[in-house]
Image (tube, rainbow, N blue to C red; front, side, top):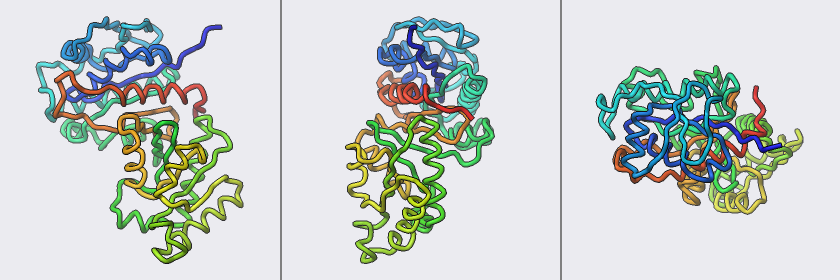
Length: 335
């Protein structure tokens, strides 16, 4: 029986950014063709121009449903929403039209995934200012996906070279992030992380909880959060049956996880985990949005307006986002 490849939907992102270009380049990559059946939701006119500017020759196969796809090397299947006339916007500039169009691509992909017509979504970058200009009532991908799937508080996980990193807090000030390092919040977040890992097919996982202070506080010499908040959380979680370790000093925990000691790491604030993953491999740091009824991965870079339309954008992150989606799709447990 032939292997059934995961069917991955790619919303092409902001038409004025690098999303169309990296989407085209990614779908022409042999590793994507080998491991997935992939299609783009976007505007074929924009995609054709992106291919031309990149010096790529390809056949665009316009489809109305994924089941109509012809999945072979050199063919790009497109559900064409025909909503971004290239004559009505300029590359690399904020545009209400592009903000609205990029939302509609995501909306269509979510609809297909919710109906079971796609196994996962791998998203290209969108622009927050263009969303606002287009009167879209969301500030970014996560908020859009939460709204379209009626999900409260989705949970972000980064994956890079097999290392998985979760976050206790993300878009808050560093001062506020320190205040959020509490026993109750750690326990609640770890429980959510384990649920997310199980949905991705990662069973009996081990997790390290990073320390907050230098050397994890050295028993209170450099701060007391480890003693007062983190250690009690770890003890409680262990009593509940979770295979957690911590606090592990932040200057070593990511190295240890990368080398296989832990299945995942709980980073205590935004930059603690972002710096570690993106320094390791910026282009292959992929965001996985957990807690949704569908599987979604994404590049973790922006629209790169400064190089949009020049044909020089690297597709590495987009390729990796598709491959990570394909990795987890066979195991993903739908809600």
